[in-house]
Length: 243
Ligand SMILES: NC(=O)c1ccc[n+]([C@@H]2O[C@H](COP(=O)([O-])OP(=O)(O)OC[C@H]3O[C@@H](n4cnc5c(N)ncnc54)[C@H](OP(=O)(O)O)[C@@H]3O)[C@@H](O)[C@H]2O)c1
Image (cartoon, rainbow, N blue to C red; front, top):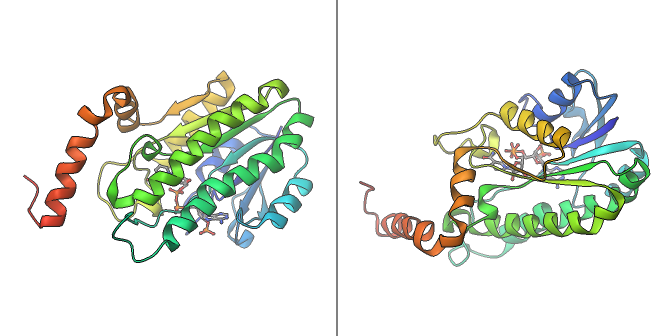
């Protein structure tokens, strides 16, 4: 089995997905990053990939034609509000990367996975796929769009036997969440849960308590999810300390 894990390396942090695949005995693991020189994990083959670059995505799909598991992990978060942001640049970057980039990857690798007998796609989403937090509003919109594409791609690729796994989590202890000291799950725990799910043929991973709690409340979101967020936002904009 060959696997393409992209954007699993950053700032010297252990590339949890790629490392876990090597540990589980995958025959070949590609590690894709914009700076492929940053991929130094033993047993992982570096591949240069910017998922916003259509030509590069097509080249990588041709180069990695033996892939049977695609992990779409790349993502950006700009902590941008809808109304207060100075312009739409952050919202566009988040949508271009998290939504269009992931969609482009799914489209490019669908025939590769079909040739492998179906294989699997893992899309790294977020608890913010489920609701809007004004502090990272446009990121949430891009993750909601990515969740929607994940559900649609699963239906479209069912005929070729491709398993499409949606992964949701609150904070994970990576550079993206470095600004907060809120409780975080480890990238290693996420990777372990994800590949257990792939092996079990499971379509959704709710990787932490926060994502399990929010998903359970979705049918009553305006009663249970949004009021505390509104309260927190109102306190923040009025400068009232949280009790
Ligand atoms: N950390 C969290 O709290 C958290 C929670 C839930 C979900 N997630 C999701 O988990 C995934 C991984 O995030 P992380 O926590 O590891 O964040 P991170 O530390 O900021 O890493 C993000 C990775 O995405 C890559 N990337 C960004 N734009 C790219 C592009 N255009 N093409 C290719 N690679 C690109 C980055 O590569 P460079 O090194 O080249 O910048 C980096 O390796 C993301 O989809 C994120 O939304 C994170």
